[in-house]
Image (cartoon, rainbow, N blue to C red; front, side):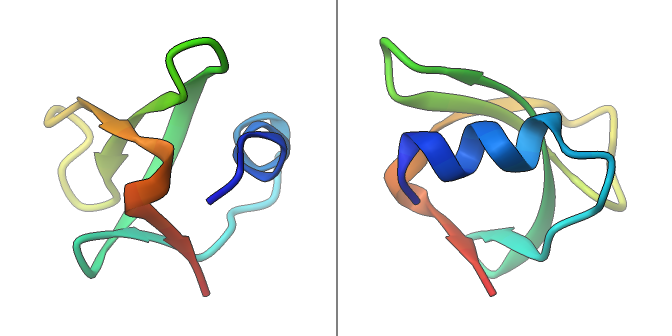
Length: 59
């Protein structure tokens, strides 16, 4: 996923269909310099992780 689209999704009040390793996730924050995003699985909000933007897919 590109940086700009990830930022749009993170700042939008509308839920986007984004997955990480096939798992639906919520994007909390995008680090534009590091090209990473802080995400968590929709069913496990306590399981935050920092991942590469390239590993996120929008459906």
